[in-house]
Length: 182
Ligand SMILES: [Zn+2]
View 1 (spheres, helix red, strand yellow):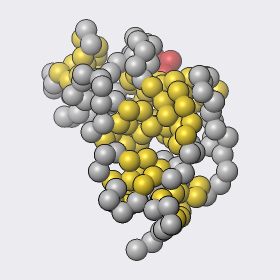
View 2 (cartoon, protein in one colour; view 1 turned 180 degrees about the horizontal axis):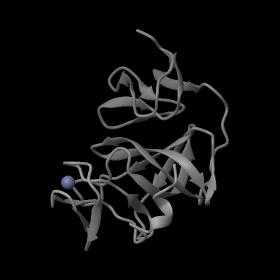
View 3 (cartoon, rainbow, N blue to C red; view 1 turned 90 degrees about the vertical axis):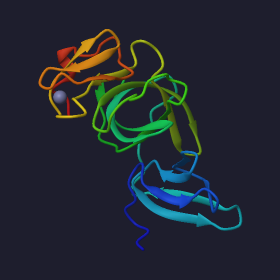
View 4 (cartoon, rainbow, N blue to C red; view 1 turned 30 degrees about the vertical axis):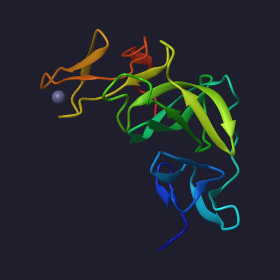
Protein backbone atom coordinates (compact mmCIF):
# COMPACT_ATOMS: atom_id res chain seq x y z
CA UNK A 1 0.00 0.00 0.00
CA UNK A 2 1.39 3.38 -0.89
CA UNK A 3 1.07 6.16 1.63
CA UNK A 4 2.06 8.91 -0.74
CA UNK A 5 -0.01 11.04 -2.99
CA UNK A 6 -3.29 10.92 -1.13
CA UNK A 7 -5.82 13.25 -2.67
CA UNK A 8 -8.64 15.24 -1.09
CA UNK A 9 -11.66 13.15 -0.29
CA UNK A 10 -9.69 9.92 -0.39
CA UNK A 11 -10.15 7.45 2.44
CA UNK A 12 -7.06 7.30 4.67
CA UNK A 13 -8.25 5.26 7.67
CA UNK A 14 -11.18 3.53 9.29
CA UNK A 15 -12.82 5.67 11.96
CA UNK A 16 -12.60 2.81 14.48
CA UNK A 17 -8.81 2.81 14.06
CA UNK A 18 -7.89 6.48 13.84
CA UNK A 19 -9.35 9.90 14.46
CA UNK A 20 -8.78 12.76 12.01
CA UNK A 21 -5.70 14.87 12.72
CA UNK A 22 -4.33 17.61 10.51
CA UNK A 23 -5.74 17.94 7.00
CA UNK A 24 -8.20 15.14 7.64
CA UNK A 25 -11.88 14.82 8.43
CA UNK A 26 -14.30 12.05 9.20
CA UNK A 27 -17.46 11.58 7.22
CA UNK A 28 -19.08 9.51 9.95
CA UNK A 29 -17.60 6.23 8.73
CA UNK A 30 -14.05 6.72 7.53
CA UNK A 31 -11.31 9.35 7.80
CA UNK A 32 -10.62 11.22 4.57
CA UNK A 33 -7.87 13.52 3.38
CA UNK A 34 -8.41 17.23 2.79
CA UNK A 35 -5.03 17.88 1.18
CA UNK A 36 -2.64 16.37 -1.33
CA UNK A 37 0.13 14.70 0.60
CA UNK A 38 1.32 11.70 2.53
CA UNK A 39 -0.17 9.93 5.53
CA UNK A 40 1.27 10.41 9.01
CA UNK A 41 0.06 8.11 11.78
CA UNK A 42 0.23 9.03 15.46
CA UNK A 43 -0.30 5.72 17.21
CA UNK A 44 -0.20 7.23 20.71
CA UNK A 45 -3.02 9.65 20.04
CA UNK A 46 -4.55 7.39 17.39
CA UNK A 47 -4.58 10.25 14.92
CA UNK A 48 -4.15 10.07 11.18
CA UNK A 49 -2.93 13.21 9.46
CA UNK A 50 -1.93 14.27 6.00
CA UNK A 51 1.40 16.03 5.57
CA UNK A 52 0.79 18.30 2.58
CA UNK A 53 3.24 18.01 -0.30
CA UNK A 54 3.81 21.74 -0.15
CA UNK A 55 2.95 24.50 2.22
CA UNK A 56 0.07 26.51 0.92
CA UNK A 57 -1.60 29.82 1.58
CA UNK A 58 -4.77 29.24 3.53
CA UNK A 59 -7.90 31.33 3.10
CA UNK A 60 -9.11 33.15 6.21
CA UNK A 61 -12.41 32.87 8.02
CA UNK A 62 -14.94 35.07 6.23
CA UNK A 63 -13.29 34.71 2.82
CA UNK A 64 -15.58 33.83 -0.07
CA UNK A 65 -14.20 31.07 -2.24
CA UNK A 66 -15.19 29.54 -5.55
CA UNK A 67 -14.10 26.03 -6.30
CA UNK A 68 -14.79 22.68 -7.84
CA UNK A 69 -16.51 19.89 -5.92
CA UNK A 70 -13.94 17.10 -5.56
CA UNK A 71 -15.94 14.72 -3.43
CA UNK A 72 -19.66 14.42 -2.87
CA UNK A 73 -20.29 12.49 0.33
CA UNK A 74 -23.54 11.73 2.13
CA UNK A 75 -23.16 14.47 4.75
CA UNK A 76 -20.56 16.81 3.28
CA UNK A 77 -18.83 18.01 0.17
CA UNK A 78 -15.13 18.66 -0.36
CA UNK A 79 -14.27 21.63 -2.57
CA UNK A 80 -10.98 22.31 -4.32
CA UNK A 81 -10.53 26.06 -3.95
CA UNK A 82 -9.86 27.95 -7.18
CA UNK A 83 -10.70 31.55 -6.27
CA UNK A 84 -10.41 33.39 -2.96
CA UNK A 85 -12.36 36.66 -2.77
CA UNK A 86 -12.47 36.75 -6.56
CA UNK A 87 -8.72 36.23 -7.03
CA UNK A 88 -7.46 33.06 -8.67
CA UNK A 89 -5.36 30.85 -6.39
CA UNK A 90 -2.84 28.26 -7.49
CA UNK A 91 -2.46 26.60 -4.09
CA UNK A 92 -4.34 23.34 -4.04
CA UNK A 93 -6.25 23.74 -0.80
CA UNK A 94 -9.60 22.21 -0.09
CA UNK A 95 -12.46 23.08 2.16
CA UNK A 96 -15.11 20.84 3.58
CA UNK A 97 -18.76 21.88 3.86
CA UNK A 98 -21.10 19.97 6.12
CA UNK A 99 -24.37 19.57 4.25
CA UNK A 100 -26.37 17.10 6.28
CA UNK A 101 -28.80 19.82 7.50
CA UNK A 102 -29.64 20.94 3.95
CA UNK A 103 -32.88 19.35 2.80
CA UNK A 104 -31.78 18.43 -0.70
CA UNK A 105 -31.16 15.07 -2.25
CA UNK A 106 -28.28 16.24 -4.40
CA UNK A 107 -26.58 19.20 -2.72
CA UNK A 108 -23.90 19.36 -5.42
CA UNK A 109 -22.30 16.86 -7.74
CA UNK A 110 -18.61 16.17 -8.22
CA UNK A 111 -17.18 18.73 -10.67
CA UNK A 112 -19.88 21.28 -9.90
CA UNK A 113 -18.64 24.83 -9.38
CA UNK A 114 -19.72 26.20 -6.01
CA UNK A 115 -19.29 29.35 -3.96
CA UNK A 116 -18.73 28.97 -0.22
CA UNK A 117 -17.80 31.08 2.78
CA UNK A 118 -14.92 30.00 5.01
CA UNK A 119 -16.30 29.56 8.54
CA UNK A 120 -13.44 27.95 10.47
CA UNK A 121 -10.01 26.41 10.27
CA UNK A 122 -9.44 23.55 12.67
CA UNK A 123 -6.34 21.34 12.68
CA UNK A 124 -5.44 22.40 9.18
CA UNK A 125 -8.86 21.56 7.79
CA UNK A 126 -10.74 24.45 6.26
CA UNK A 127 -14.46 24.38 6.89
CA UNK A 128 -16.87 26.23 4.64
CA UNK A 129 -20.58 26.88 4.42
CA UNK A 130 -22.88 27.00 1.42
CA UNK A 131 -25.97 27.87 3.47
CA UNK A 132 -26.58 31.53 2.54
CA UNK A 133 -28.63 32.35 -0.60
CA UNK A 134 -25.65 33.67 -2.58
CA UNK A 135 -23.67 30.54 -1.71
CA UNK A 136 -24.01 27.13 -3.31
CA UNK A 137 -23.88 25.74 -6.80
CA UNK A 138 -22.97 28.21 -9.57
CA UNK A 139 -22.60 25.68 -12.37
CA UNK A 140 -23.69 22.09 -12.75
CA UNK A 141 -24.61 19.58 -15.40
CA UNK A 142 -27.30 16.96 -15.84
CA UNK A 143 -26.66 13.91 -13.66
CA UNK A 144 -28.08 11.59 -16.32
CA UNK A 145 -26.60 12.83 -19.60
CA UNK A 146 -24.17 15.65 -18.59
CA UNK A 147 -26.29 18.01 -20.66
CA UNK A 148 -26.85 21.69 -20.00
CA UNK A 149 -29.33 22.48 -17.25
CA UNK A 150 -31.52 25.50 -16.58
CA UNK A 151 -32.89 26.68 -13.25
CA UNK A 152 -36.48 25.82 -12.36
CA UNK A 153 -37.40 27.43 -9.04
CA UNK A 154 -34.92 25.75 -6.68
CA UNK A 155 -34.19 22.82 -8.97
CA UNK A 156 -32.49 22.34 -12.33
CA UNK A 157 -33.90 20.83 -15.51
CA UNK A 158 -31.85 19.30 -18.32
CA UNK A 159 -32.31 20.96 -21.68
CA UNK A 160 -31.35 17.72 -23.42
CA UNK A 161 -33.12 14.87 -21.61
CA UNK A 162 -35.59 16.75 -19.41
CA UNK A 163 -34.30 15.27 -16.12
CA UNK A 164 -35.21 17.43 -13.12
CA UNK A 165 -32.85 17.37 -10.15
CA UNK A 166 -32.33 19.40 -7.02
CA UNK A 167 -29.18 21.25 -5.95
CA UNK A 168 -28.32 23.77 -3.27
CA UNK A 169 -28.23 26.56 -5.82
CA UNK A 170 -26.68 29.98 -5.38
CA UNK A 171 -28.95 32.89 -6.34
CA UNK A 172 -26.21 33.62 -8.89
CA UNK A 173 -26.62 30.20 -10.52
CA UNK A 174 -26.34 30.36 -14.29
CA UNK A 175 -24.71 33.77 -14.47
CA UNK A 176 -22.42 33.38 -17.39
CA UNK A 177 -19.27 34.97 -15.96
CA UNK A 178 -18.59 31.80 -13.99
CA UNK A 179 -18.92 29.40 -16.89
CA UNK A 180 -15.50 29.98 -18.41
CA UNK A 181 -13.51 29.87 -15.22
CA UNK A 182 -11.27 26.93 -14.76
ZN1 LIG B 1 -29.90 15.28 -19.22
